[in-house]
Length: 593
Image (cartoon, rainbow, N blue to C red):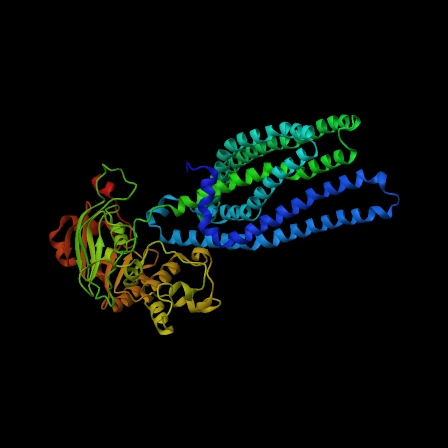
């Protein structure tokens, strides 16, 4: 959590709110103008009451009455003007900050997303930014305008009568002390509430995404119980917030009322002694009534300001997160890649791994020549998937290098690199958009012929039979499709990108044997011109590749033709024998045992 104070934290949004500040400042002036008009009305009332004894007819009162009416109407106009000025720019600030946050989330490495719950990020992008908008458009404007109004009001009260003004001010001083103490207590509670709201959003998101698993295992009640526990925890924190605010409101209402009562009691005595006119006393009390709203607003404006401070802190926790995988300052270009991919003494361990832990990848050396397909096999947990993720810099190597056509991939922009290397994952993720948009995600300008060829290679022609064909909108994550259908569309997406290098992380695991055979036959036409690195969990997938690389203990321990390796390498024969037609495989621990 940031150690900066409230003002310093809130000032961090200045670059985002800079364009909106002129209208927000005008809104403050409009609000202040309305308050000043309200403070003027008691001045007129004083003259009106003091002049009653000198006025002979009712008609003589009308000019002063119309003045009061006019001041009231002008005050209403100022309120409308304030709202018109501040509401629109606040939404622009919110939209800009949300766009910045989304761009940052896209730029952050996968390691960041591995650690952050999606619900926490969602709550920052929605609830927190909405709170900042409301504070800019409402809280900040009124906090400044009401604060100045209180100062001017106290000066006016002292101008009416020094004694009464000092008494009223002295009685009101505890409000500021109570407000200061409130801020210190409320800040921690407000931040805890926002974090718990993020955890609750994560719980909902996980339950919705995992609804099939929960139903299949009959664990709906368990998930509901966990959700209820999180909700009750948030409820308790919100009640604590409400208690703090309620206590503040008690003093905000009680102290001014007490101050008015004391002032009235003393004021009557001053009128009786001839030290103050009746009109002045009425004007004094009317002014305290005008100050009632600015005084009472201190409570919720303080709480809103503190909530906004926590929201700004949470926003910048994401914005300030380091991007470890960046584009080089002077990138090199690979206009048309030949597809030669080389791993040179590659080492890797995950960012959150203990410093003393061994490297997951411990000196990988592997060369894929242009147009060559290599199957990567090894027992579960040996690092095959991790190695494929390094090729597109989803993670960064911690030692050694990976080159594309002899150029270190860290010398390329990420867009350039990923336009030359496409991936298809075992966990096929689709987006809630049309089939066409999903398949052409990596190459939106592809022709209909290219799209059709990609669907044919992936055996995904079923897409044409969907209700709206390729323009059918599939549900969130493609859950309206079967697992095999999702995998085939994800594979079609990788093929449609027409990359120089195709990385396949066991993308056929959900297919039946017959469909897999058809996909593999079609893939051979693609792989003749494309370099391919294929994580294989089935013997048939191994047969698809030109050569095979065997991973063991974080290294490539054997490389060559399948027929050669199975003849001379005991561990290779063990791994192959552990594979079955369904893709089941023994783990590292199973091998040891």
